Length: 81
Image (cartoon, rainbow, N blue to C red; front, side):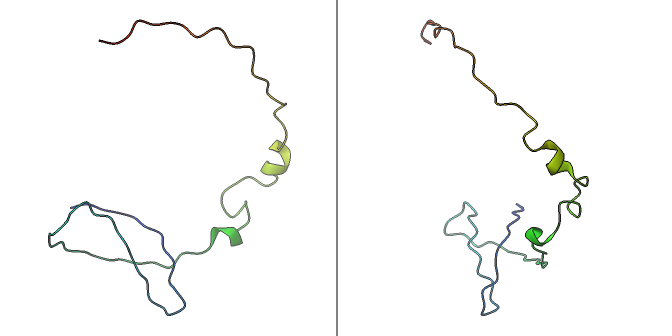
C-alpha cells in the first residue's frame, strides 16, 4: 500500500477533482480518500505561524553583501574507466 498526500482546491461547483499518478497501468486499485479543510496560511500572522515577534524586522538585511572570492583553476582529473 502506498500513501500520497496532496493539497488541492475545490472548485466553485463543490467538486474536488484529483489526478494522482500511481505508476500502474491497466490494473485495478483501491483508493481511500480522507479530506480535511485547511486554513489559508496567508491569513495568519508570523507569530501565529510560530515565529518570534519581530523576528523578520530584526533579521532582514542583517547579513552584509556577500562577495565570491576569486576561484582557482579547475583541476584536471583522470577520466573514469
